[in-house]
Length: 557
Image (cartoon, rainbow, N blue to C red; front, side):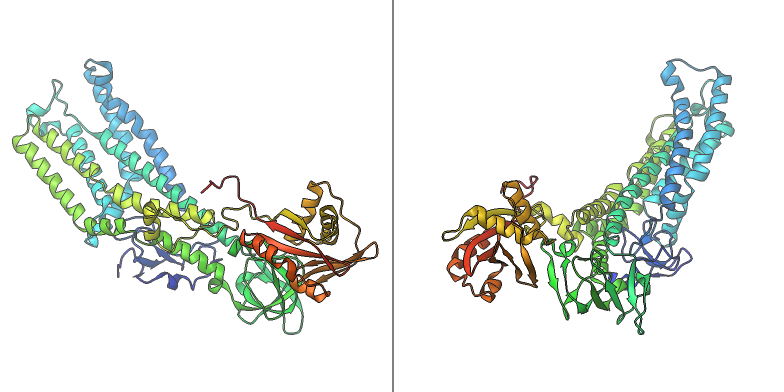
């Protein structure tokens, strides 16, 4: 339990969040978690009591809340605009190479006060809150170090500007002025804001990858009421047991079972397979897949966060927040890191004060602040989780899902990678690769008859055969009495001849034994080809092989 931030914190696994609707528009009562400390959970947005980072939704919504990103960007440009002239003013004597007139020097000093004050007292305020939150919960974090460094440098500089007499004479110059470090405070704030801006941008790109997964699902469904009336309703309003109608070309809205109708469904978003899967009454379908040819009535079995797509999104989100071995080491180190740094900073200040050269106070302050700022644990505290977040997000965009961060970190030790080739190493679009004429039949005739039968079909294999014929200069024949045999192939007539094109079951059905060609067919299949038999007038005329060629970007093994 990590109470604080005026909201309850809970701990649990990603399954808790899976009960949330993935289509909620960032509701205020959504569960938020820390990207670095996944055990921190609270209702609504806020900041992590352990590290001070902004919390993010446990599961992403369909819309992006970029309030924090815009706030940090605004603060950064504000801080940078004011910090640059402060830094140039502080470098005045070094740039000019000679002392500046006392009246001008005093005016520049006042300008530094006026310009750095808004940076320290407004732009950096969120960091003070996060640093103090860590102190309250006895988990001082990197913002504790940053806040201490900025406040110490700015407070010292204010005292040195308006109460120079309180400092030893050896710290004052010929005009009675004491060296100040307004530029240190202002520039540190600007740099930290820049780092946070880049971090939020990386997190935003990763969230965009997850939202792309969410967008695979349709926003509405055509629900069939008990009385038979049909109406388009938001996807969130569907419940288990509802029946929906899915027309050709539409995305299937729910995971369920086909109650009526027959169609082929493109499941490539799920399996990577370019060939559609035939669905009939009793078959199960998955939400976000595409219905291609016929109308279906589907009874919902899993909706909302229980759907397969939602579980995939939850898996990606969980992987982004899982702890890599290096992060677990960082967590153990962080418990002692910040207190140790503060102790070293104090020891540094005391060391310079007692044994350092004059002006001892100035050296003590500068070096103590340097220890606080430079020791900021950004490499372990930010770079590691951000790298995991970006890697899992980019992988999801490319269709690769990691179960946890440890799997990502282990990639460096892999020497052999085994991939399902379909749609990953291949184009995902079938292409006619070979035409084999059997007996006395000619190859051109086999291809012309096959293309004629498939010319009216939208099946990927049919398109591959027609495109293959046209690319070879073969004109498809004109087929009459066309008939589609579900799950087997097509039949028709041409010039008085009976044609049949499909699998072995179809040829047996029309009285043709394809056994003699089975060995050649199996040889092609072992190379990843799909084989189709053509029969003409009761005789086996040929075999067509359709394959999925490698992408040009796939390197040779």
